[in-house]
Length: 397
Ligand code: FEO
Image (cartoon, rainbow, N blue to C red; front, side, top):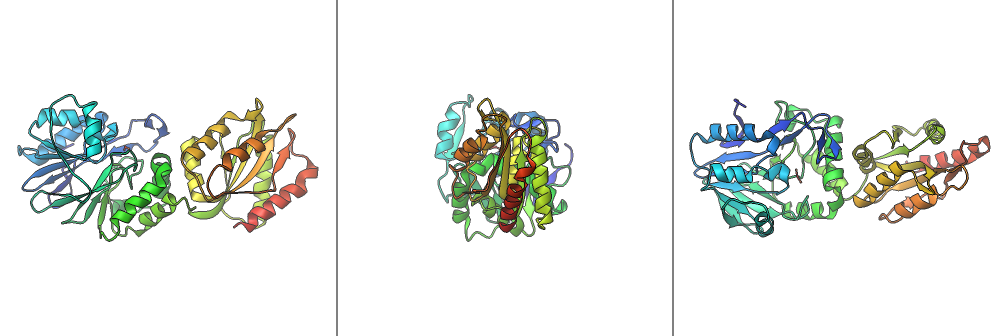
């Protein structure tokens, strides 16, 4: 990387993107790649804010050397120890042995386990500050957004929130490192939601806790560890974060998730969708749980208020793909939704009972009493029941 990317006076972007990685955390597909962000402040003192994933280490150090121009690196501030941000800590210490790590008490415990080169460190606590000269960083602890040791920092001169994993998103930065260079649209928010729901979704109350601590801080820019730096009107993303972290749907849309072995359950869902459309329900989405990676399904659950789950019975239990999806919903703390159930069972239908058990363990959900059992194929006699189901869903809009 030969071009130096400045985000503000004396503050540089020294992160990098990976377009080749197929799965983030070896789990979530990332068709548009991912960025690992790192920032370098050059003041009376110099401070590197986080490192990057090992895959982009070379370009990371090229940029640091170019920006520092032989100045020493005084501080390495660590906001989060997950390896996509901490993989280069040891190498930073080898190249800049006089660097002081700026960490918190939880990080102290965790670092001992795996950093094998000697290091000096300074522990910061809630609301403590680090002065670099003109720029000052103020630290705010953010436990479980996404790991227990996470902290964020606020740069007081330019009013920048260095937000760790919060406000991150999937997708490489192809030249545009600022959100207002990208014109954030639904594709941006879709990936930001998929990232939030799957990475931080479980810990909504702790995200809310962080927001409370940040109340009254007038930040002008949010610099996360993944995805574009947010600036300009921050209210759209802040509003979405409030919805996501309080488990409130973004819209009243209906989404139908189905698993279907021989297209029979699918056909019934399609009929339901047509009946809904006739009742003027807009934006109905249908997702094949067998074909769609669960991270996209979870993102849709975070977006929509009413969720139809349709699945065959399988080995006396749930169809495996639907079972995985439901377990993920539970793990990620989904709340405040309406559920409507359809099952298929040729001789001993069991799915609705089991789906209902899992879904009813979620907070503040409503499971419709109007459910449907298909015996291999939907029977014409059941049409009034499907009509009734559509009518009820339409009234939920
Ligand atoms: Fe991007 Fe929780 O690491």
